Image (tube, rainbow, N blue to C red; front, side):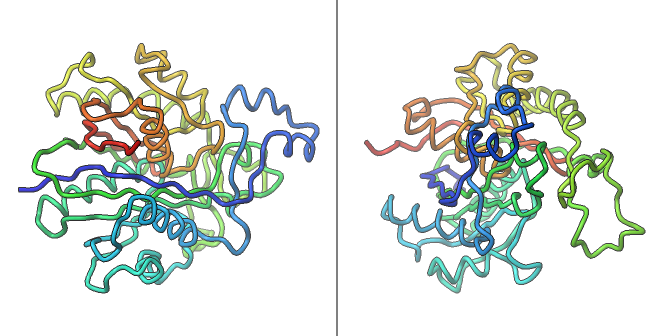
Length: 336
């Protein structure tokens, strides 16, 4: 049997960006220093009106192929994670397959998950490889939440950034990923929800839990999401460690979905971890939803903080409500 191994990662961001100086000048009543203290974010990349997740995903994929000399013809399966697809149909993965020049004999699918999406994608790739259905999987996470955010929405515009990541997952002789643990609680669907442009009629639609203060299509109940995260994440870490037969002291780095700095600081405190053990990487990108984890992994690799043999626990958590975790031992040797 073969197992999934996490190979090289390439990230891609729109050229357009908004930093705190820009937002502060545009909205003088926004306290950008207080916002930074809570979010840890100074800059967010924002897609142009005609720039969509397929464009960002293709940019990440091409960058991956070029930087690491990967033959597009070697890809057996494309997994595309997004909650802001170009079209309701066809699936964005089909568009990306053609634009990246992948074989027509590959499998390609979208899956609609947000903050837990990268870990879910790793589990799907691992299953495809273990079953023998694929030997080389391309996992692309791509999001443009900004298209759901009204310009005057202080709570969301200061948090979410657009971006994509392409991760190559290869077959290996020994397992380095998993076991995986998952969680789902649809009772929290109203804590982060798009309320407009839906197929479901308004009279039967889910009502957002939080009073709508801004005209964004996206509505978020931040305090409830923080409460959920502080309950779920430590338990998910414990479940992943138990499934792998690891102890807390076996873990070198805890890789968490980069939601906001304040939430991550609360998690550090609750779990008794320091900054080296649970890194934060939000300042230049914001919360990029399903791409925060591969963006973090890419940076830590470039800094030499993730190298072969490094033991990690990875957890994605948020919209859905959905969460997923796994243990992961790094095997990729970053080129000099």
